[in-house]
Length: 486
Ligand code: NAD
Image 1 (tube, helix red, strand yellow):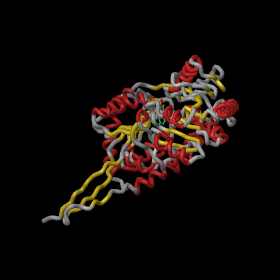
Image 2 (cartoon, helix red, strand yellow):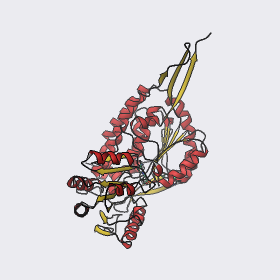
Image 3 (cartoon, helix red, strand yellow):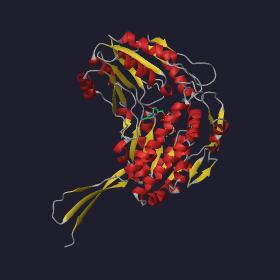
Image 4 (cartoon, helix red, strand yellow):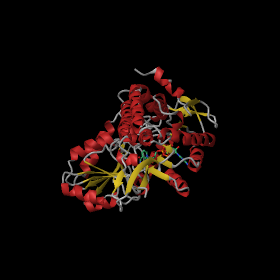
């Protein structure tokens, strides 16, 4: 049972540079805040350019060491780290909940998902196959090897502070890259725990550095550092544009996992009860702070009143509270800024004619709580139908047919996840043929597992994490064309 002891664990959270703990950054320290109570959890270091340049320099040395380690041994270290992570599940989950707000059960599931990513990519380490190409001459061989791209700078968000870290570290390290990791300032403890596990089970100290503090300063220094070969970000479209442009100027490789505004088509032939039940279960997960959260519900007019009624009723029944309390089904928003944004979007929508069918307001005056909310009769003129809300908002609009649903689904520049509820194979084929997204869920919502590719198109980013694609993102082809000596 984790209570007081785990309560204190964030106190250990610190930078890890060259395998050493650093408790005070070049820019001092700051407080981590519990979003459920607004109380201080711990004091942690704040770093900037100094740490970034130091970490980049060490990453070049770490790359030479780590890329020379046999893939089977790299896999062994990743698997050992996964085992250690599973042993620490209760402490880790407690920290995630305290820093980010999600209920403990969701924090545990996230932590196990992160450990799974290390196991899966541990296996992929020894499957980074190259190929032999038939050459044009009898005395010539063409062989393509896959080499690690080099030292990587990785940036992760606060909404999944363990899983987003694992989805970068596991494939990058499996491929033989060294990594400088900068997690979100609000939630560094999960990253610290993962990095510490890797270092304790044998990862060379220079192959992984963990720093955070002043994001713009750190990212500018890392992107500019000559040692860094690749930039990978999971975050907002705004920061994605900044980092991708800076990386582009220096011709550095990038993977950008960015925001979404994910449509859900509930077709005339959908199983309505199932659509309502799945929505109730997934929409309010992590208080809607999920990049692939189902958000714009485009419901066939014949099912619309019953869908709105069913989802609103389910939303009203959700138990909102501190994530550390066992009965809680939805915690607070992660930051005051997130809560304020959601509130502003709801106000704008209501002013423009949306109907609040559930929630719509803050809860209490301590902690960043916002009620599970269902807005009906939303229109494209409302801000909430254009900006990623990243909160517990289900936005529901009626549509006359599949053409109208597809037009609205594809209206925004985002293209991360899309969903459809249908019992008709032809409807599914039409949606799969024309939806502009990186991922499509038919009759269900869960999409993020280590073995399948995860990524978006357009403003939702470029490149994929997960699956063999996620590994390929850290490898570069190397051709050896060999002719027999005359
Ligand atoms: P964010 O873009 O504000 O920050 C992401 C990371 O980038 C953080 O570590 C941040 O500190 C860092 N960063 C680097 N340079 C920065 C700079 N110049 N200015 C500010 N930050 C900089 O995102 P967030 O608010 O932490 O996370 C929420 C966003 O992440 C949402 O848009 C969500 O959709 C997206 N997200 C996407 C995925 C995906 O896989 N596509 C997954 C989770 C979250």
